[in-house]
Length: 253
Image (tube, rainbow, N blue to C red; front, top):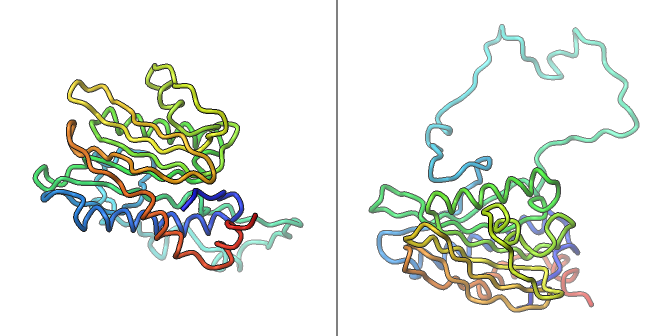
């Protein structure tokens, strides 16, 4: 199945696809690709920190409580004591958008206390829009590698002025390396980073474009051992979960 132009559908449609593609990748990893002692989970991105040093259990167990005598009130509770403001012509709630509801697949080693050994990141449109978001994604990616975590980045999203042909060139620059030349017209990208015993990563880069078939991509589990990610098969399975209206928009001439 060729890579689609995801700018033709809404962010919520891509978010749905995002979740299902990660689910299919996780299924493939857990149902035979990973050797004994390793497992994969689809996990939420907690800020931009490196997953291996997060204490998610502690975060899940902590709560914030406000007593009945506290100073925080809801809009409804405060309405009796505050004058109601006349709203302007346009009201916009700036809550979390679909571009910010990020997930990734983490591969963990049971024999190393569930340590993260590899990560798979799927780029969303929100990662490419805004300098701060771009810098956060690059910083997070470099952080994986500097922490000894192998990394795969899957980028089938439309390019932007800040990320014109994938994140690899920006990651190279952040690590003090010259980025490779990019083939003309190939503005999508999948990359696998191998953290070698020397500590210096090696990148396996496939430059793609709309209409390209996805290659199998190595995902390193150890510095000298990898498995092949079935990107094409899992992309196709996830694409089949989309509602017909979105598939028709993506497949239109």
